[in-house]
Image 1 (cartoon, rainbow, N blue to C red):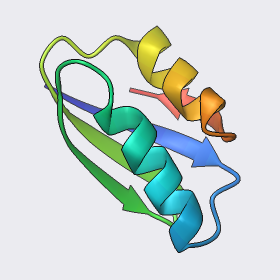
Image 2 (tube, one colour; image 1 turned 180 degrees about the horizontal axis):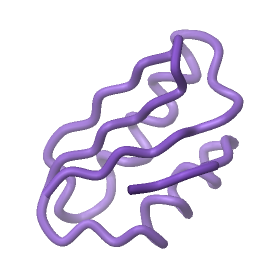
Image 3 (cartoon, rainbow, N blue to C red; image 1 turned 30 degrees about the vertical axis):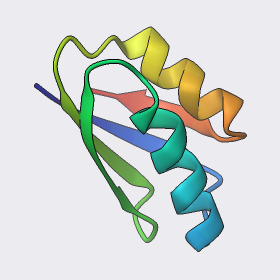
Length: 68
């Protein structure tokens, strides 16, 4: 399963690592790719729940504007 999120507020390598680390802590997440230039975060894994993904990004200090 793959989810693509549009995340607002990321601008540097620290932002990228913070979002990646927060998402990788979730159960079922296998891989996370972040594109700083577009704000897109691609998450791959099993049984990915939108609300948990959004909560993890929020706790890292960023906002999910769209998820699909």
